[in-house]
Image 1 (cartoon, rainbow, N blue to C red):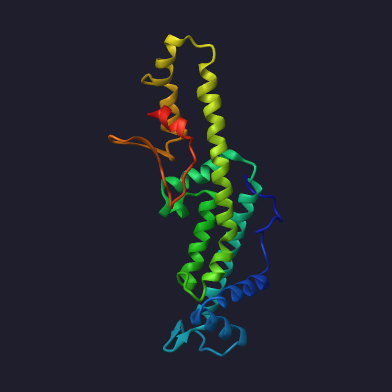
Image 2: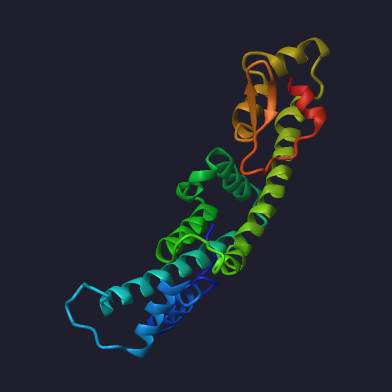
Length: 232
């Protein structure tokens, strides 16, 4: 789902975009501040010169300001989409499963959360990785996104529990005891369908260790101990 037109993260004017880009750049070290200062004062730079010996041309600076503004707009659009789908557990599952499957490549996942991280990386490309000088900004800037992931992780746990109840436990009701082992543990058993599909990003069957929970940047879906014993 996408937020309606006019929601947070929608289109803004060119003047607003430039102001946003300048504000963002001024929050970072000497490089960002210098670009913002020169552009704001309107220093005369040789037209047509892409790069000068002691600095950048006006065109290059305008380009970096525009890119910073776009990165911000893309970020806010993705945050708006995450907020709009806050009550959609399947959307939370999609975001969190993508994160657990490839924590280092989540920005390429195509999910709303992944698009937000992609926008963060785009801004980092312009300003450099977080440093002691800019760390406070990055902590505040990515705060809403990190909070969204905490929420979606809890939402995903609820979603998995609901799917376990409906796709596994509910299917065993009224089944004769002697048929339960094959229904659950057979070659196409309900248990293996659940662990091999829905729960696959969050549990792993390790050699001589059995099923264990998967960790992604110290995050884990809180499966209960009885459930993990049941798998093993």
